[in-house]
Length: 477
Image (cartoon, rainbow, N blue to C red):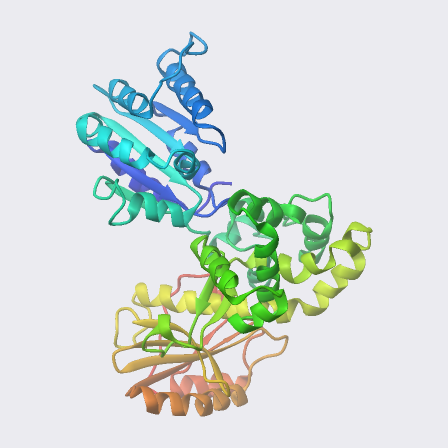
């Protein structure tokens, strides 16, 4: 299924229509759909699609030579020769697109750079001398986000200033789940997203005609299923010491979110753990969070680590600790564990989705809070209290509580939110305060009446899945 990539296709189509040479960078984590996007775009256009691999320089040059030869001589088989230098190979692209538009996609570009670190400099030289004067549309694609940013996008990178556009392909948003699982209600769609995230490859593994927990048992917990070993393959493709990274990811998934806790439970030294965490952040698999009001987030000592990917969070929470049990064929007991703990697991991801929704609604102009976009959105904690959602801009703020429980939220939750927010409001100096409650199971009639009177925003899973306008917010104290 090819879903929700209209903006990216539009950018590529605009580049195709340009009269000049184009150098587009497409990057994002593995399985996010980069190859599917590019193949859909170039399917009916003249193109050469070449994928680098973890191989020797000579073999990669031979592979590239053959791909280029087959593009220019489709009836003549293999080239029968190999470009001796990458400079000459890249120069040959100028002949390919001398008079007419032609797309050349270099996929897994970081693999090529890891084989020959001079590649970006060589490509920059050829681009400046020849390629920029052609009709070439060159697309550099890669999954190692950090390397793509360092070697291609960064200010000091050789190719800096040459790119004419870039696309960081992100996981699909929550709303896209409806196209995969129209059979599920809003609560079910949020739940499946909390388990699989927005990775298209993962979403296609579940069957919307089956109950959610049946899908979990058959498509994740079964050792013969595609998703059962996916994290192994994903991390082994990216990392040289996957065992140490696995230990860190499992520690975070189990709630050891502070650096000292991770060091203690993994038994590794603090220095290596810090380096491993930096690489995991580079890959966008882990993120460091601080209270939203911290003035210098990078220097804050209140930082905690979270897994960014819902499926990795699920796998390291429910699969990794129980490999032996699952391999022995006792899937039912782990499936019961998932059923018992699923609501608690979904809770923090539900909070993330609520924060994403606030950012989206603000961008759409649907939150009349006095600012077009909040300057900061996140959570707040001080060791004693915690607020799930704070969106602040200027002297105005929206504070909210997110509840993934099986019973409706009542007025007591709003009262408690106001109590927790009071010292934060006073210290931050906000003058205009608004409240929001997000709930899986809806709201009591008493809360709905109070919310209407006070202008409190009430948001359900169905609201998270829609683009409707939010009305009725009033200033609260």
